[in-house]
Length: 247
Length: 310
Image 1 (cartoon, chains in turn cyan, brown):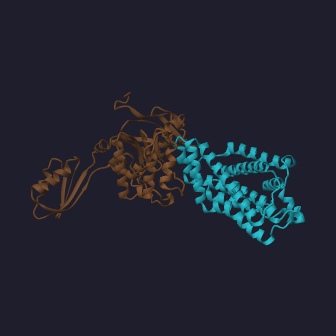
Image 2 (cartoon, chains in turn brown, orange):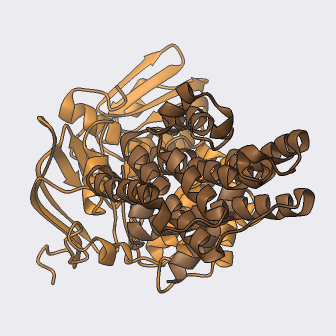
Image 3 (cartoon, chains in turn green, red):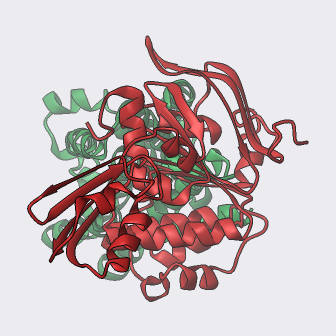
C-alpha cells in the first residue's frame, strides 16, 4: 500500500515535469476555450438549442482531453518506460507490476479530471458557462469514457515498441479524431459529407455522451454511446490481457 | 550445509541451459557461489554472462537445469527473492525527470526493511546530487545511484551486471572500493564483467564463460599460475654490468641485452623481486623499468586462442 501511494505521488510529479503532457492535458484546452470563446462569445444560439458556443465547447474539449490521455499520454509513458528499461528495473524489485499500472492509470485519470475542472472553472468565470445536467450522471459518463479510452491506450502500448513511435502514432490518431468527432470543432458546423465519417470514430461517442448529459440527458437516452464505449473498454481489456508485454 | 566443501552455497546451478530460438546462449552449465565471496562471471561480449545473471535474478526463464538462489527457485519465487537480493541491470534506467532523493524514497517503499537513504547517499558520494534529476547525472553518478538502489534494502546477495562499463578509471576504482567494503560487511557478490583486470582485482573466484560454456572456474591467481606463462622485466642500466649476474638468478630462464637495455624472463613469480633485488645489491643505476606479469587476459587467450576484446 505504501508502495502504491509513493508510486502514485512520484508518477504525478513526473507527469507534471513532462512539458508535453502538461501542455496537451491542462493548457491546450484552455487556449482553445479562450480563442473560440473570445471570437464567438457565449450568447445563446438556435443552432445549439439555445445554448452558447462555450456551453457546447466545454464538454467537447473534455472529450479531447480524454483522447489526449488515452491516445498519447498512456502509450508514450509506457513505451518510454519499456524502452529505457524503467520497467525492467521495477521488475527486479518485489513491486507487483500491476501496482505500477494502477498508479499510472490513477494519475492520468486525476490529470484528465484536472484538465476538465480547469476548463469548467475558467469557462464559468469568464464566459458564464451554463450547465443543466446532473453532476453525478456526468461524472460517471466521464469515468466510463476515460476507462474506454485508457484501455485503447493500453492496446496501443502493447503494439508500439518505442516512445518515438508512440508519439507519432498517438498524434496521427489524435488530430484527425478531434477534428472529425466534434471534440475540437462542433459537428453542427460541419457539412453532412464529413459528419458521416464521425460515426466511425470512438471519440464521437464520447462527445455525444458528455454533451448530452451536460444538457440534462440521461444514460438511458444514450444507450448507443454507453454500448460503444463499454464495448470498447471490454475489447481493450481483452486485447491488453493478451498482447501487453513488460519488455 | 557445506555440500560443496567451501561453506554454504548462496547459489547453486546445475545443468542450466538457455536458448533464444535456435541459438544456444548458455549450454548446460553447473557451478556454485559460496556465501561471502565475490564471484565473477567473465568473458567476452556474447559469452552468455547477462543471460546467466538474468536467470539468477528471475528475470528470465531458463530452458533447462535447476537454479537455486538463497535456496529459492528464482523464477517461481521471484518476489520473495527480490526482497533479499540487490541487482544492477545492464540495460535499465529510471525515469529521466526523477530526482536522486525521490528515486531512493520510491524504491524504499517497495521493501519492508531498508537502510537510511541519507547515509547511503553519503557513502556513495550522492549527497550533493540529492535534488539532481536522473537525466542530468553523469555515467558514473548514474552507476552509483544504481548501486544505491541495489543496496537500499540491505540485501544478502548482490547481482551486478557490468557495473563499471562506461566509467573512467577513477570512477571504476571508486566502485571497486565500495564493492570490497560491501564484501567485508559479509555480502555475497556476483558480478559480470568483460574487464579481466576488474575480475582479477575484485573476485575471489572467476568463472570464465565463452559461447555459453564454462572454460575455467577457479581463483584468479591459480588460473594465472596454472598458465606457466613468462614474467618479463625490461630495464635500462647506466654503467657497467654483466649479463651473467642476471643469468645466475634462480628465477631467470633467459636474459639478453641490447646495448644498455636488458630483458629477462622466467616462469617464476619471484622474477621481478629477484631482478630488482639484484639491481639494488649491485648498486646499479637504472631507469625505464618495465614489468609484465601474466594476467587473466593471458588465461583467456590461452584457453580460446582469441583476445577477449575482439
